[in-house]
Length: 226
Image 1: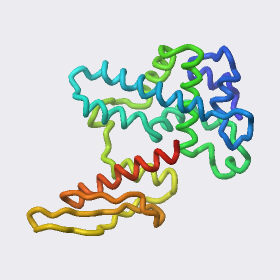
Image 2 (image 1 turned 180 degrees about the vertical axis):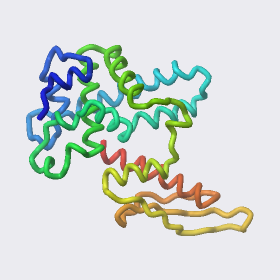
Image 3 (image 1 turned 90 degrees about the horizontal axis):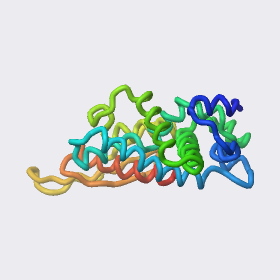
Image 4 (image 1 turned 60 degrees about the vertical axis):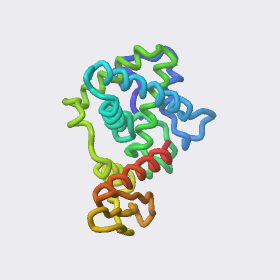
């Protein structure tokens, strides 16, 4: 377990109530009367606002759809894990021996949740300005270039990165059906991970159907990890 003062130094923020930081770093497996799930819930909402505001100010000519895509590329499990890694957050979390043996300190979902919880704790103590300062500094340090082209990845790529990190495998896309005349076909594709069907989707091309299936699968996996 790392020294929490070193974590505070990386954050550039000293907690007035150190117990709030301890709570933010406590996974439910640690079997304490408290854990970080409530702070994670709060931090998720605060970070969504902070990053949305940051992009709104940074890209005054961007359309709503572009801003939404950029925010989605930053405000997600993989994005928050990147920020957590910059803080070396895995060294500080409180987890059970079983979770420790299961490489819990490296799990994207666990690290992402801990980062959200820490930001939730900062918000409770010092408000939105401190969360904004810390988060934006981390984002700009972790992302040398911030724009739609460099941030946004297609859903298939994002799903593959997530499943490799979480399960150690890549998704399989299976064509289930193709209907309609040659000039107006509709394709149905399912995406599987470890033989589990995550989603089924249709599209006017195989690629479009795969992208939509990956999109639905990402939504499912993110809900399951929250």
